[in-house]
Image 1 (tube, protein in one colour):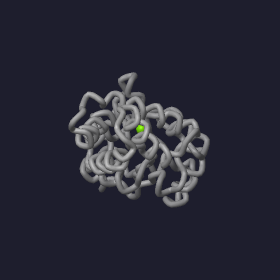
Image 2: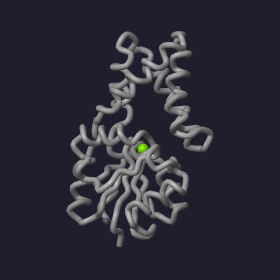
Image 3: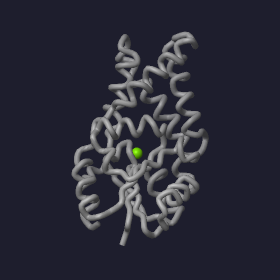
Image 4: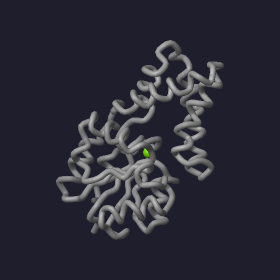
Length: 209
Ligand SMILES: [Mg+2]
């Protein structure tokens, strides 16, 4: 019944925490012990963005600023850290277990596949490429390119328009109840919640498709 699947990237296809750790260690090799603080600051700001307090673009600037201030480095350290982190982030590509197998299965069943993520387009595409999974996707819908962040209904509407699809023809798969599941549903798109914390496996959740 579905023609296409939209798939979130972080914590659905690529494992966010190890990717974050790797990029952090490259950006701040002198202080690996600050990772948790960095991770917590970024996590809080991204959570606030999900509920509309900030755009993803704003958060991308805010978390390096807050982190650098929190460790007592001068403000001049923000830009170099931010650039080093982003450069490293663009190559991080630890796969979630089963991600490639899920993409193979969906592709073999004839679904058109699209990535749907909140971030920078060029960095997300680079990460998918490093992970060897970019070729599975007909297109990538990334918030900074689209102009709206999930769960804004306009993100999904623009993605549907670009793919030439109707809402009922698409299934969204993602690990965020807010941005992926409820966001897609608001746009009339069915959604599958990938609940990693509950131990869901990607191959298991797509078994009925
Ligand atoms: Mg995610």
